Image (cartoon, rainbow, N blue to C red; front, side, top):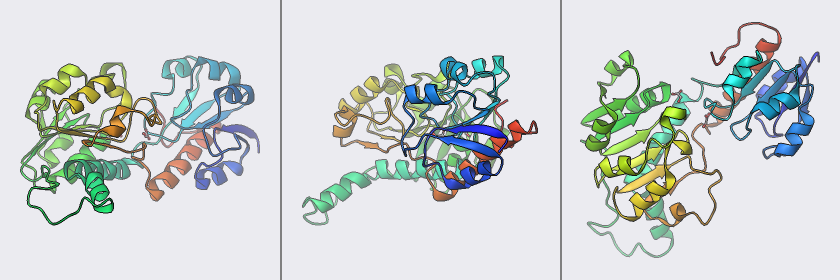
Length: 321
Ligand code: GLV
Ligand code: GLV
């Protein structure tokens, strides 16, 4: 191959790897785990492209270690908060990411989390398996349904809108959204643009679908949880960093809100001794939002095609502009 590409783990879905192999020499971290930082810095020198994931911090030190040969960084994720975008821009390094192809998968997982939290599925399964299922009981394992409820979506991008379309089919009463700009696509679901405070005070379900940027860092803090209904359920499928996690733990312990469903936490993986794992009213998933087989394969191919296009100096299928 005429290009050198560094791949940060050995178990990237192989579709993308096969595409790259046709034109590139690949240097892979040889284990199915994130490359250790020191190893990354040692091995990335001379690469023309980096195929990375959200577990790899791409900062000044990595770019320095790669050197002036580096033309493109492509991440197998839609989120890019792990990449120092300014630093890449300064050096003329292009950035690839994977919007659109994981929207359905992530919206599906968001609905799964919404239902498993509100209808208490993990707790109910645990009871069934451990002898808690004594008889059918009229008030046992009850939780709020989606029908007739008000759902608030924070961040009304591709994923937020896909969540709205799905939520609507559950006969919800109203869908509210909070977003910097008005979204004309909202007409499709009748979603109403409101302020952040209006969304917090009026929603039965508060769903975080926004990117992690300086403006959204710990957007969900103590004050935000206190503004929510005491019966509210909070769902996060974006990034753990949008939440002040200690404030969330306190809100769940004190029943300031009813429950939470999290696909993302701080840190990841979440340590086993985290209070979140001890709370019955919290469902924690290990960051599997985009983990449908189709989505992950397509993400891998898109990441490879982003790299190939950049190296061949043509238009990338999904360049972060
Ligand atoms: C997953 O979190 C992604 O950003 O793709
Ligand atoms: C990113 O968060 C998206 O909505 O695609």
